[in-house]
Image (cartoon, rainbow, N blue to C red):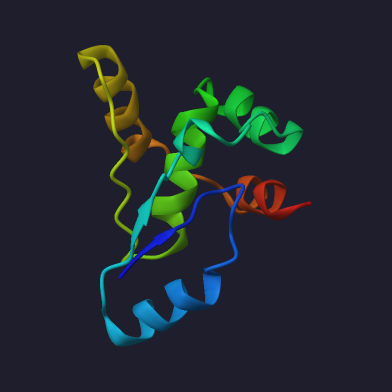
Length: 104
């Protein structure tokens, strides 16, 4: 399943949950907002600061923490950006982090 889904656009959470229940992969397109979404939410910045990470890394780590069927595939145009994105997989979000990220 592929839907527009990222930390600032969560309307498809029920679809993600259904995919998880069925064991179906969920591939969010524009996992970082596609350049059209501002990801500088205060809660996101707070968690990024706590981990010494970028906002994009936390947004990717959040996607990966949501469900084992979520497959984040962000686009990139440079090796440095690819390395930054790949580093997100090493971030373990705490329950406090996840609570901060779900606040409106």
